[in-house]
Length: 170
Length: 170
DNA sequence: TGCATAAAGTACGATATCGTACCATAAGGT
DNA sequence: ACCTTATGGTACGATATCGTACTTTATGCA
Image 1 (cartoon, rainbow over the protein chains, first blue to last red):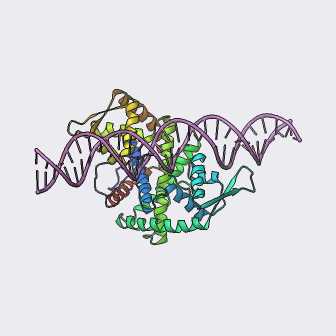
Image 2: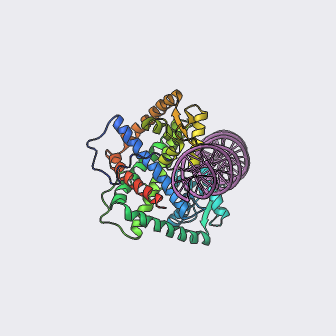
Image 3: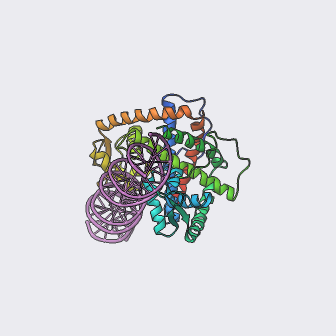
C-alpha cells in the first residue's frame, strides 16, 4: 500500500488546528494521518531495502524481535507480535531458516508447535543490519526538527493500541 | 512489512521523555516509531480489506486521489504521488480499469503517456468506499484520546517530507 | 534534419502477502 | 479412554509488489 502526498507545504509542523474537528474535517484528518503513515511505511521499507539489498523489513523485524525479546518463541507468537497472518510468518521464517539466520526446532511443550532460535550467523547479520539502520537513522534524525520523534512515539503507540483493540473486537 | 508490539503499557501517551535523547536511546526511539508506523499501516490495510472485501487500500488511494486532485493525470504522476514504482502503479491501474472504475486514454500532449479518468462506476464506488471508511474512522475517533490525530498529523507530514527529501538525494 | 539520450509505459519474472483447506496434536467433557 | 472441538503449523493458489529489460516517443544538441 502507499498513499498520496499533499502540496509540499514546507517541512515544518504548523501550530494546532483549533478546537476538536467534527464531521468532514475529522474525516479528512483521519484519512490524512493514515495517508502519511502508509507512505512513511513505504519509504521506510524502501530505505531498508537500499541499505540491505535482498533483505526486507520483515526479516529485520523478526530478527530484531528475537534479539530484543529473546530466542525460543513460537511462530504464532511472532505472527501476533507483528499483527500478521500466520501464513505470512511461516513464509518469512522459512526464508530466514533457508538462509541460515534461524533454526526451527520442535517445541517440547507442544507437539504441534515449534521454537525459533537465532543462529550465530543470525546474530552476526543483526549486527550488520543494525549498523546500516543506525547510520540511516542518524542522518534522518539530523534533518528532523528536534522532538519530532519524541512527540510521535507516545501518540503512535496509543493509536496502535486502539486499533489493535478494535481489530480484536472484530 | 509489519512490526512488533511492546508491552501493553496502557493506551495513553505519557508526558515528555525529558531532554533530547542521544546514541542508543535515539536509535531505539527511531526504531520504535518506525515499528509503530509499520504495524498501523498493516492494521489500516486489514481494516479496509474487512470493510471492502476484494479491494485494497491501493485501489482506494488511487480513486481518492482522482476525486480530490482531479481526473486526467498520468500513471507516472500517480506513482510519484504514492512513492511507488511505476510498475506497481501500472498493475493497480490495470486492475481498476478491468473492473471499470477508471479509463486510460492516450495523452494528447505526449504520445508515450496516458491519462487516467474516473468512470461513473468509479465515482459510485468511491462513495460506497468512503462511507465504509468514514464509519470505521468514526469508531476509531471515538476511542482515541481527543487531539491524538491533530497532534500526529503535522509531525507525520514533517517526517514524511524529510524522508522524501532523503530518498531523492539517494 | 539526424542522432544520442532521456523518459513513459508495459511485459515478465521473482518474491511477498495472505486466505482457504488441511493435518497433527491438545484440551475438555463424558 | 473416547470423541468433539480448538489450536499450531503448513501446502497451495490468488494476487500484490517491484526490479529488469524492452518499446515507443520526446527532447536536446550538433
